[in-house]
Length: 399
Ligand code: SF4
Ligand code: SF4
Image (tube, helix red, strand yellow):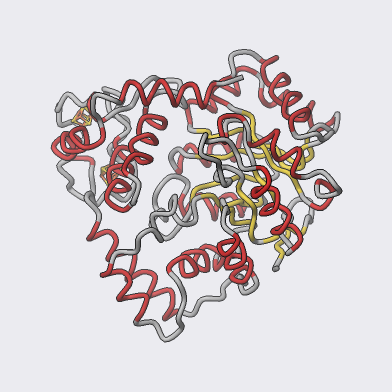
């Protein structure tokens, strides 16, 4: 296992982190604790020392499970990360309630890496108003948390604004070769690193869409490379190539998968891809963009929409519908991410578009946004949308 240094505190963190949102589950949907414990401990025994969970993962069961899985001395072998559910905060006291409950659930007296979960610009404004900076300062000084960070899903501009708003130790962003210009993107990654923040990466395989399944036109490009690597290895190596990246998270639930990732992480040096290999990844990226339903880069120039449509996220999810092998999961994520549960401004669905056309001239890709949104509505929104939003609320808002 290779390790990279957290810039502000010198912690040597494994380049591969264990993401705790996709454990093996039983038929009834509960975590298969025997198997999942084996997986977590196997990864730790093979050098993984960063474990990342959050309040809502596995319907609230990830944290208490992890508390049990890290018994027998495993807690001391890792840096533990979990997150404050920013969308559930109504008062300053809520922050202490969540953190103290998390310490109980995780059977620990401190969280090594504590993140404000899933920020976008408006959510940040809200939690800042509620006193999150005072909360972080106090939790750090009384030792309940060691390092403060945030995970992020908004625009690059809001990302920079949040980076500048507090003396953060680290942040967590979505990053892969299709998201260079989406959300924080490369601009955000470099900005955070320039300010001395460690950067943890989520979605290095874009929710599995870069590997399952690999379209034949893409596979042909990978297969033509002189160095043979799987699609997952290419995608992960591309992320690790960036020296600004500290840890890359992977939600691992198969032994073979864990072994493969650990083997790949052994070669994950910064700047380790050649110019020719980077060109190859670029070729694959362009091929994906051709295969995608919508050529949206996520630049957000079209935003804000006066009707509240989150245009880039609608298009990202619409593309995922075509890249993913799980239509149900993509539709559920559409309901969860755009249903207003994680935002302060209410729902952001494609169906809110009134075809005013105000976004049209702002799109550098010259996309016919209102028409594409209509198609997205037809495929992503159906009679079960309301029910999916209700389930997502249950999952994300249980206390
Ligand atoms: S056309 Fe639709 S998406 Fe574009 S600005 Fe108007 S309401 Fe928003
Ligand atoms: S629709 Fe166009 S302007 Fe909006 S995010 Fe996508 S590429 Fe950028």
